[in-house]
Length: 281
Ligand code: FES
Image 1 (cartoon, rainbow, N blue to C red):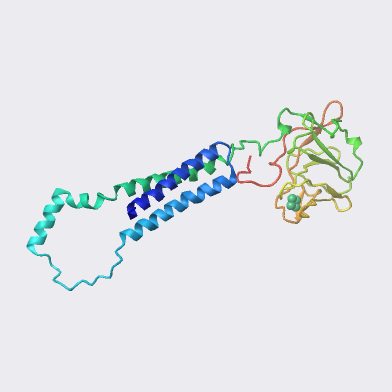
Image 2: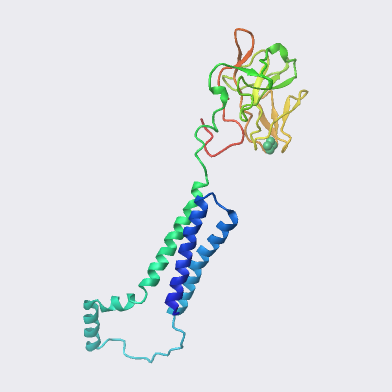
């Protein structure tokens, strides 16, 4: 088998492997098979290029005698004639068309295979990262894990209670900390954030990497995240005062309904949890 055929064979094997890779991926994927096929796809292209390049490169040592640089009239005439007849292009392309076609097929298939991972990114999250069930129907009561609504009097000063929007106690993005602050301490909250008799509500999801923030040092008014020790100041709009978290815990505006139960009057004032590429509302 001559070098051109060997190179074509490498490119064709690469193209077939790329198609097989697409089939395996479309049928649900199998990591080992995909890795093997990807290796054959890229290896086939590489081997084909090497084989072809070696065959196309002269291997003998040639010494060209110095000669006059100017072409003779006869040489000029011969070249002009050959060019006009298209013989030059024909001679160069003749034996290599097959290699070029197979190389084109291999590179096209390889390029298509590289596009497959885009599908693995999954569906666009839409507004799921920016909204929680609190915004579904407002105002909404806040309830404990067993569905019990909460009054201010259920919360002694310095106490902490985890609540969810009524009907969504399993919502992973909605756990909320209710904290009854001390009446004799200054309390700063976000503009427009409702506070009822010293009760404030913050998202329980750490703004560093989303761990539940559940440790409350009432004496200092500090909330601690156990994962990487981010610490948030309850009396200063839950701003971070220590650790890797860079954003405050989002605040939930509170009020009471006609029966005296605590309700959320809006969704959290910022998207909850860790930051992401497009965090603004
Ligand atoms: S997840 Fe809370 S500090 Fe890292």
